[in-house]
Length: 100
Image (cartoon, rainbow, N blue to C red):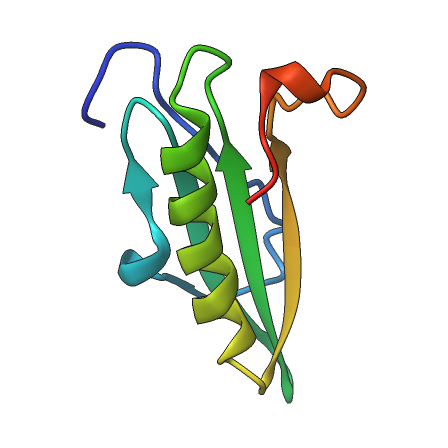
């Protein structure tokens, strides 16, 4: 953890015994946090990604980092990808962010 207040977690049922951190998808900055794990259950591979954006973080930096995560996840064709988190983006207020 690089700053006060940061931290993500992913809870799994203990039946999943083959779990590995994806260090290249894990980030912790003031603008963006992500935690990713690979889980193998039988012949099925899962990629779980948890994301958090601080409401006070830089939106453009968040978008760039989030895009990197999505591109990396998209390259893992053998995995079923699950993405979840708290993005703190008000879609009803266009002044809170801009389209890229």
